[in-house]
Length: 72
Image (cartoon, rainbow, N blue to C red; front, side):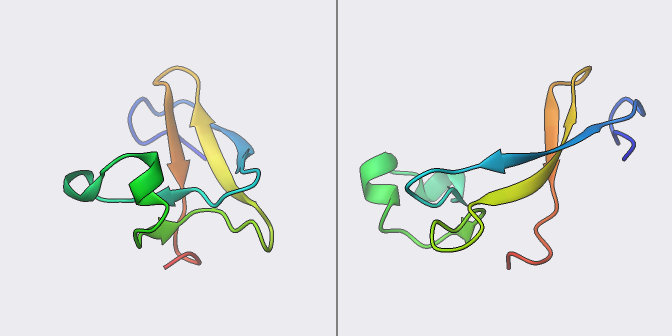
């Protein structure tokens, strides 16, 4: 995949979770890790299934891209 910011080639990999799901929560709803465990958000990983998500990394821009089509 080509980086949309710098146009360099990105590396394919995964973000892997452990015991708890990783999820995205809107900035204005972020109340810290303990409270966020009970909030709804976009689950990026699922500890009861495949607890990892495919990710592309641009080492030049220091950015990652996650395709969430199958997550929401």
